[in-house]
Length: 165
Image (cartoon, rainbow, N blue to C red; front, side, top):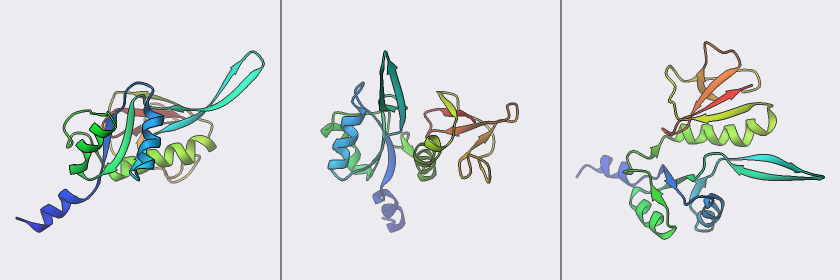
């Protein structure tokens, strides 16, 4: 058996798992308690009604949670937490830069920059670039040639965040 190949199989990868509807935050909390490296994209929202304003967090991609674990532990975790794998583990494996890019986008940029974004299922075409200056400095994505002020941020094979800034 090739030792180089077996070490690749034993290294942890990022995976996309599906939760039951509206269970993303409790599952994220449980994964953290188990010591599993996980990421749940959240944004701060302000809900206004009558004379009250409430600040809360909203899940950006419903039912989706990213976890970093060993391939052999993936099925055990999904059964233990009653999660669903979207398909075979190879198809839901994410690259490290995609997850890091999403973490950077939601933790660093969205709170600081006035931008709007929407999630769409289309995958962008073209070459990935890293923005070197401006409000979105450091973000990796596809720049829209047609629309100035728009960048498409890929989301691990799930689709794209279209960001207007």
